[in-house]
Amino acid sequence: MDPGPAAAGTPRTPPPHGGEPRAHPGLTWSAAVCGLLSLLVMAGELGPRALGMGMALAVLPVPLYVMMALWLDRFEPEPARTLAQTFSWGATVAVLIALLLNTWAEARLGGLIGADAARTFGRIASGPLIEETAKGLALLYLFHELRDEFDGVVDGVVYAAMVGLGFAMLENVQYYGEAIKQGHQSSLTTFALRGVVGPFAHPLFTSMLGMGLGYARERTHPGTRAWAPWLGFACAVVLHAVWNYAASRDDVLFMTLYAAVMVPAFFGVLVIIRMSLKREGRVIREHLETLVEQGVIDADELARLCRVRSRLAASYRAWRTGGLPSWRERRELHQIASELAFHRWRVLRGLGHSDEADNQREAEYLQRLQALCRSRAAVKSVTAPDVAARPADPAPGAGPTAAGEMSAGG
Image (cartoon, rainbow, N blue to C red):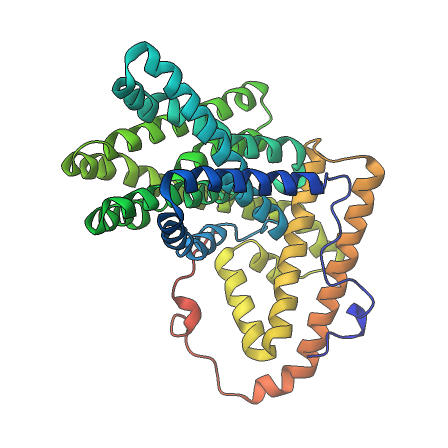
């Protein structure tokens, strides 16, 4: 589909994030070295066969879990590069930090209280504290340095899920490898526990800190911004400790604690995400209402932009009527509109950069959004006769869009 002359001279991607720090190549190499060292340590303990089979089992379900985590961020999806770096931190740097510090702590405590007691203490107390700190460092960096990418609770949960999935993937390599060395039955039990029953354990733990940081970003009161991250971190450590304690006991106790603690915590996070998505819809409405008065978008378009379900329906209609190019253009319109709204929100809260950079970015977003809206209007005028000649669409609820759509606007 021809995008129309109005959009021909404008870039197809969102404008660059002026003033935001970019990843240094040294960070990528550091992560690669940390990941390699972690695997070398595991290889020394497991052997090549158990390591290879453990890696295969650990990596296999990761794409599904990543897609499920990314589905949460419907209004303002985070940059793929940042998400990949966050996942890599969890799978490399955080794992190596936890591996070294856990080993050191257990060795020091072993000389004081005995090896068995040190192992138990490490599993229930020092281990969760060390591991949540190692994962949380990535979230703290994003919160302080990438202000344009960390707007609230939803972003905090998404980033926490990515770093947690990365950590869990490499940690599972060791658990699966040890189970494979012990025999077939142990392998099945470990895979059922870590790969089926608890695939979201680490993302769930770290999401507590992510929500605390996101809540702090949304609020202006200094007291709230101070205690929310610490409360989130404490919840992450406690949940992690409960999980480790339950996993070290008999199956009955594990399933009891899993049902009484982990399942409610998981659904509680989903409820909070739903509430946060509604908040994001309100932010978009409040900061884009002036565009309706200026004639950039109409009231119906603004209403669609403020609800996840309406966005999904609009994307589906674009694909159905115009194919992949139209779907991509519709998605870009949604993305640019969200970026503009949250850019305005950040500037009003004093989270912008210099006045010059903020104004330039505002102008770039507006230019691209106007071009996309003109393109959509041109396509509608061309396809309107064809659409009018087609049979009527199915009744609401009868089409594919009625299933599986999550509403963020009520």
